[in-house]
Image 1: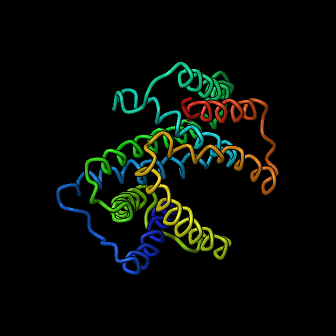
Image 2: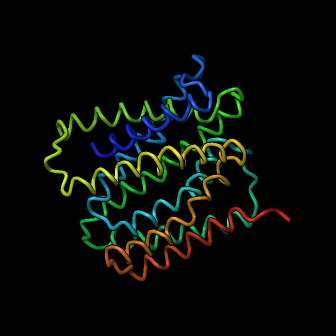
Length: 263
């Protein structure tokens, strides 16, 4: 339910912002189905996986896995949109380095009996879904130049929010505010996540996708692993494991190498 509420707050924020900017709410009928389908990849699937997976893994580890979006975007783009992203030895080296970082994060969990493995896999699935949505949005913008990024985002929030609400009602039942303890912190967190981390952040992100393309736009996530580990340590006292530190370094270096400008 928390994920659905986050998108609901985001929709409320955009319902005020779009009229003020004279931007339409409704996408053209011809692309509406694709927009809603992309909304499932961009919001419903990844947020469901993230909120479920974070029950068993640290915020720092979730941040590390979130930082792999450009790597998965490059891989998916190679198979789904061949030729869209130029391939070079440097990019292959960056991809390999990034995947070494992913293996470093997962391997200790996979060879042991760590109960958080499924949570880590779920959050890793979130990153793959985000990467797929970036490719789908790039295709939407390139084939439909009249589709405004903010209209696209608004419709995708609707698709994602309705889906998450249905999932939460089926598996969790009606919301129980009495369990939101402390309620003030919960409400502030949802307002922040909805207005800032969803509406404002994705409004900027969708503009970048349109201007830069999928892989380059998704590199804005490269700071997330470092920031997440630092904040998790400062706020929760969670000391990162050596494999996580190595994973962050390898993933970040791989993403940087993937996106170095051609000489």
